[in-house]
Amino acid sequence: MYLKTLAVTVTGEDSGELVAAASTLGIPHPTGYPLWCLLGFAFTKIIPIGDAAFRVNCMSAFFGAATVFLVILIVIRLTRSHLAGLGGGLSLAFSREFWEQSVIAEVYLLNAFFFAWCVLLLLAWRESRRDRLLLWFSLVYGLSLILAALYVYYRDLNQIWDVLLLAGFFLSPLVYPISIVPEKYLAYYMMNPVTVIIEMYRETLLYSETPSLGEVAFAIVAAIAMLLAGTALFRRLERRFAEEI
Image (cartoon, rainbow, N blue to C red; front, side, top):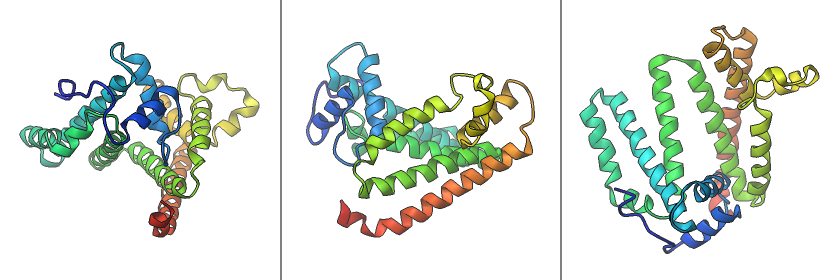
């Protein structure tokens, strides 16, 4: 549906600016939307047809459809009814504003996707009581609050965050085993809470081992600290958001 009604090129409002930023790894207006630009750049390389604007528009359609799918899962978990889930998801999908944002280059669908994902994580944790789901939510949500608040006051933060995000990716054992890290640097690696959580998953799923109590305690403390710090900073700075923007 979204692909059938997708804008074939640049539209109005911020479309041109956002497409240019995504296709060149540039920086649009504050807050800069670094993750959106990185994903948009990837879509301009992956989609084999159309101009850069069409390919970025495809990203909006993708995250629009993905958000609808997550909403269906959320409603099913809440109501235990597949019919209610389908009805809720389709109601969102065909709503005027959501449909409109799903066929043009805009940042809101990515935000909606992550919000729905966080809600689904919380619902999954409520049912399974798997603490790792809650740890991931606390880390992601706390960090998002910190970045959202600081972006308003420090407009160059998005450029710094791009570098930190890339460094964090390579410093976390996502695409390589922790065993290749030299022993003298291992202690520093394990100070990264993301590394600890990844290793907990790896030990459980790949090696059928129980994570150590120290790893679990460190991950819990780090997640709670991130969530509390993000909430406190956001509440402290939010009073002047309107004046700064």
